Amino acid sequence: MRTASFGASSTQVPLVGQGTWNIEQSRERDAIAALRAGINAGMTHLDTAEMYGSGQAERLIGRAIQGESRDALFLVSKVLPQNASREGTIRACDRTLRRMNTNYLDVYLLHWRGGSRLEETFEAFDRLKADGKIRAYGVSNFDVDDLEEALSIAGPGQITCNQVLYHLKKRSIEHAVIPFCLRHRIAVVAYSPFGSGNFPSLRRGGGKILQAIAERRSVSPYQVTLAFLIQKGGVFTIPKAAELNHVAENAAAADLMLTGSEIEEIDRAFPLGGDRRLPLL
Ligand code: NAP
Image (cartoon, rainbow, N blue to C red; front, side, top):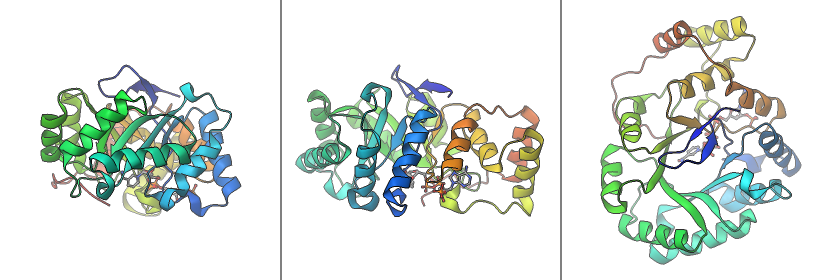
C-alpha cells in the first residue's frame, strides 16, 4: 500500500483508507469482516464520526480493531459542530474514545463549520492533545476562507487535514482548496470518492472511458477512479466498502499508476468545471 506523509507531520498514512458512513447498515459481522480485511490489506486509515449511525460506526470500528496493534492504525473521528464548544468537545471525544475502544485518536476533526466558535473548538482540541487523547486535529468541509480563519486562530502547522468531497463529478476543490492546503501543508482527505454510490453509468459518456481504461489495465472502473483522485499528489481518499471484493479492489487501487494520457482522457471525460466553491454533499 502506497503511503505519504500526512500534512505537516512525518506520519506515513496509506493513500487509500476506509470510510464508515452507513457501515452499520450492513450485518455487524460483515461490517467487521470488511474493516478487518481492509486493515490487513493496508487500509489502516479508518474514518468515522460521532454522527455515523449515532455512534454505531465508531462502535463497529472498536470491535474490528480488537487484537490489532494500535500503533499500526490511523484512527480519525469527528465532532459535530453543535457539540464543539470548549467543554462539549472534550465530552464528545471521551464518548468517541469509549465507543472506539481506544485511548487516543490519530486525528480529531470538526465535522463541518456550523455555528461553533473555532476559538473554543481549537482550545478544546489543544487540551485533548495535551492530555494525550488525540495526536492531531483538523477540519472538514472547510473552504479557503474558513481555512484562512482556522489557520489564523490555530496557528501554522496545527491544522493537520481538511476532509472534503471529491469525486469525478465534483472536482471543485482542485481550483483553490487543494492548492491552499498544499501551500500550508494541510493533508486533503477526499470523501465520497464514488459519489456515495452514485457512480457514473459505464454505458455512456465518461463512464465508458473509465470502463475502457479499466479493461485495458485489467482493473475495475472504481479502481481507475481512486487512482485518478490520488495520483496528482497531496490527496488521500477514504472509500466506504462493506463488501469484501470491494475492499480488496480499493486497497489494490493505491498501487495502480495511470499513464499521462489516461489521466488526460479522464480529465476530458469529467471536466473540472468553473465552479470554484467547495462542493458539499
Ligand atoms: P463512497 O465511498 O463514495 O461510496 C460508497 C459506495 O460505493 C458503497 O455503496 C460501496 O458499496 C460502493 N463501493 C465501494 N467500493 C467499491 C468498489 N470497489 N466497486 C464498486 N462499488 C464500491 O461513499 P461515502 O460513504 O459517502 O464516502 C466515503 C467515506 O467518506 C464515508 O464513509 C465517510 O467515512 C466519509 N465522508 C465524510 C463526510 C464529511 O462530511 N466529512 C461526508 C461523507 C462521507 P459496499 O458498501 O456495498 O461495498
